[in-house]
Image (cartoon, rainbow, N blue to C red; front, side, top):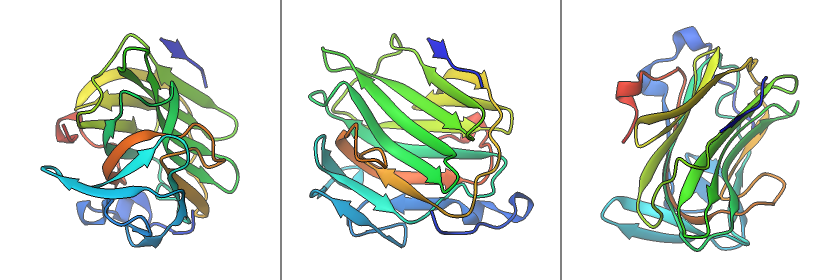
Amino acid sequence: MRLAPCLFATLLPLATLTAAEVQRWTLEHPEKIGGHSAQVLGAPRAFRDATGPALVFDGAHDGLILPVNPIADLKAFTIELHIRPSAKGPPEQRFFHIQDTAGARALLELRLTPDGRWALDTFLTDGTHKLTLLDRTLLHSSDVWHWVALHYDGHHMTAYVDGQKELTGEVIFAPTRPTGQTSLGVRLNHVYWYQGAISEVRIHPTALPPAQLAR
């Protein structure tokens, strides 16, 4: 394990947000995600299985860039994604990246082993402080669906897979600016492409109690 110490929508102040304002993005059509028009890179493919609709990314060219920062102004938040990584993808992949216009960013990533299993990698930085959570021995199966989460309570970032806590660390992460971007399937600068499927993204405007995490 290694621990490093430490976008164009304006959200309501944290104290006024309710469960009704949780942002849920279903990935069904690449051109429109969560009501936001997307810049489409490559050709993410729509498909449907028993879990519902999803988009498949090829690990080399496919990605989406949205003109929105869904964690703007938040002092605490939870980011959840429903993903199905491919066992044949590249070794380092960024499948979710938020960044504001000042450079503060949040990322969910994975590291794939030669035998096709993966470890979750989460990262926060406000430009001054930063934290990476990664343990390459905490491995998960590919080609099946998993829920992953980055949870920030104002003091600590915690990583979860299928509702199970994996790693946590203390970090200062100042509320981000209202303007910024979000990418899916690739880092915002078009490197470290993701191979696999994503069906849903959930952005909670609070540090969700662990028992309420998707699994």
